[in-house]
Image (cartoon, rainbow, N blue to C red; front, side, top):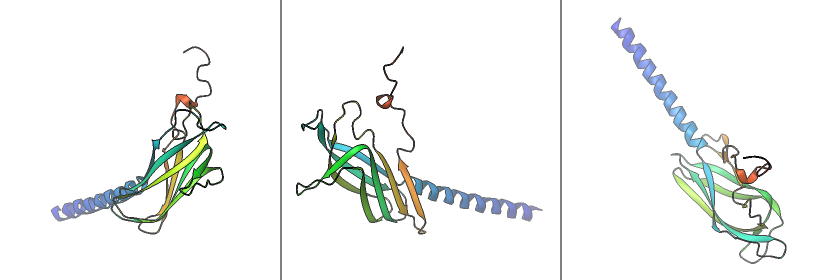
Length: 167
C-alpha cells in the first residue's frame, strides 16, 4: 500500500512540475513587450499647420530564456504621423509605424529611436494615445502576438463627457 501511495505522490509531483513549466513558458511568451518614451516632447505646435515633432525611444523586450524570431512590432497612433528620416525626408502620413527584428535573444532588448511629426493636441499627447502589437515566432516556431497596453486605459483626457455635468 505504501508503494502505491508513493507512486501516486511521485506522479502528482511530476504532473505539477510539468504544469508549472508550461505556465512559465506561457508567461514568458505573454511578457514579450514594447514600451515607448518620448525623449523630446513638444509643449506647443512648432509649424503653421498645428503639428509638432516628437522623438521616441522604443524598446522591445524578450524577458524569456529562449530567443524569439520574425519579430514584427507595430505602433498604432490615434492620428496620422509622418516619420522624419535622418536625411531630411519624411514618410507619407500613416497611423502606424512598423519595426522589425529578425531574432531577439532571451533576456534581451532591442531599441529604436524614431522622430515623428504629428498634429499637436495639448489634451491628448500622441504618445499617450499609442498602442502597440508585437508578433513573433516562439522557440517552437509557433506564432504569438502580444498587445500593449493590455487593455484600454480609463483616461480622463480621452473621455468625451469630461467637464459636462456635475462632478
